[in-house]
Image 1 (spheres, helix red, strand yellow):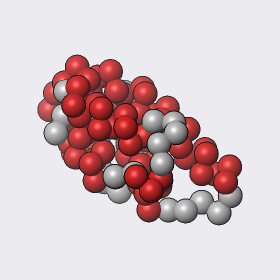
Image 2: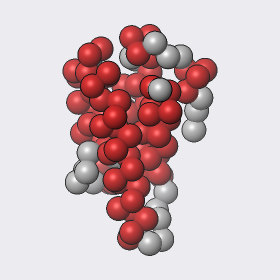
Image 3: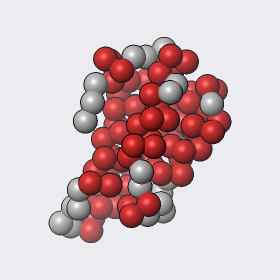
Image 4: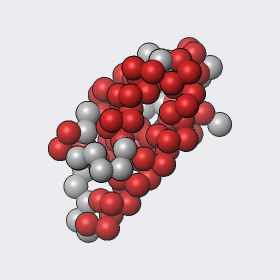
Length: 95
């Protein structure tokens, strides 16, 4: 269950930093989807590390700015907690 949540959060962090949707509704949709995936996994990450959960939250929360998005920080925050979450890089894959 955790793997697709991490994958979804990473996908929308990537979209928000590196892709510019042509339609403003698509931009809001990416923001909402990223926030939803992050919200679903944040409690598990916080059980491992509150600091790492804060990094993910600050980047993916609703109202965060695309210009401030740091995909690498989000990815690293998840990776540092893979062991604690009981998942592996191989299961998550990459973007």
